[in-house]
Amino acid sequence: MKLCDKKIVVMGLARTGVACARFLAGQGAIVTATDLRDEQVLAPVIQELDGLGIHWALGYHDKIDFLAADLIVVSPGVPMTHPLLVASREAGVEIVSEIELASRFISAPIVAITGTNGKTTTTTITGEIFKQCGLATYVGGNIGDPLIEMVESKQPVERVVAEISSFQLEWISTFRPKVAALLNLSEDHLDRYASYQEYIAAKLRLFENQSADDFAVVNRDDKLVWESAQTLTATLFPFSRSRELDEGIFCRNSQIIYRHDGAELQFPADRFKLTGVHNLENIMAALACTLLLGADPAKALETVQNFESLHHRMEFVRKFKGVNYYEDSKATNVGSVEKALESFNEITLIAGGKDKGGSYAPLVALIQQRVQHLILIGEAADRMQLELGALTDTHRAVTLEEAVWIASQITTPGGTVLMSPACSSFDMFKDYEERANRFIAAVKAL
Image (cartoon, rainbow, N blue to C red):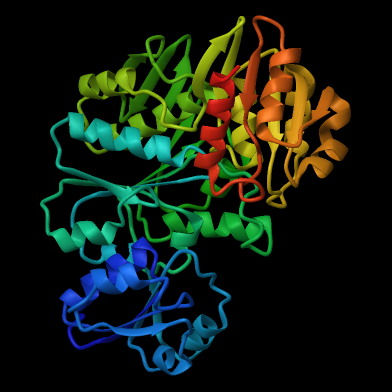
């Protein structure tokens, strides 16, 4: 892809946009960087990119810049429906996401992982397995470092592992992973997409450029995933917690069994440090992604046995008066809470926050079966009480600290207090990490 002297607009100057602007300027492109934030707010960015000859359009977007561009690189936070992007596309201007741009300069096999939940854990495990096998591996995408930073660094890489969000897939055209994994699908980001089906369609774009020589690692137990996978061109490689597979990876009697091309490998699962049914699925997906690309089975097993939970994903906080406290602040949608509830019994569930528009109906049976007490907080509390409150003993709390205190009073020894919100954090907190840290502090203060 020739970039020298091309007029390129970079829209959005968060970390991904900054990395793209720097790379493009280094390739000799004529770069215009634009963001609705003003020069004062973006002063650190201007300083970081100083001397690269970048043109700035800050505090506004100029339609002339967009229509005169040879290429527009758009940040994930900008929706496809933005009027300037619509007008540019109608005018024939090519629009790409950062992962599309980066992929055109990557020759190493790419493992791309998406899904509503579990992406970060699966991506991290996958990267760790490759590294343990002695392969030079870059882990990035929606997790941590943009892929374009790897391209810019010119570092030699044998494997690329990328967590991919639906937003990043909106502007791809040639992006083609050697192994693409879809972990699960549940309602999310309905504040961005017009419908659940539109969200699903965005996720499925991960597979659109694959051929039969590539692999699609898909969740056999997720009805929506499996139905969607039937139209894919790539070779299907399913994973399952509930059924035996002739080709794929599945769990049977505390053993993970991998079957491919007539060969079978077995991995004992009883010594894994990661707990929860969702993590068993994440581990199977990571093993599939790595073994399909030549990872050493013994080193893969050693990696997953030693891997511990990432922060704010079903993280054990402490045991107090016979009650275990778990923090699952990253569970910002219903699908992730389902997995959390499947992992425990005798639960006191703390939930609520900023409502994301999805249905709470998938939680009904699990709350009836496993949740003894429900404590609701945040903007979504009224709606959650209306839809879920009659299913179990339900309480309201004004603050997260009050919710923890109530939980400590009503949960009997042997029970589990689980903060798994099913909502975003932005009504009461800066982000899910602040929510997590406040919960942890409240539990430790008991």
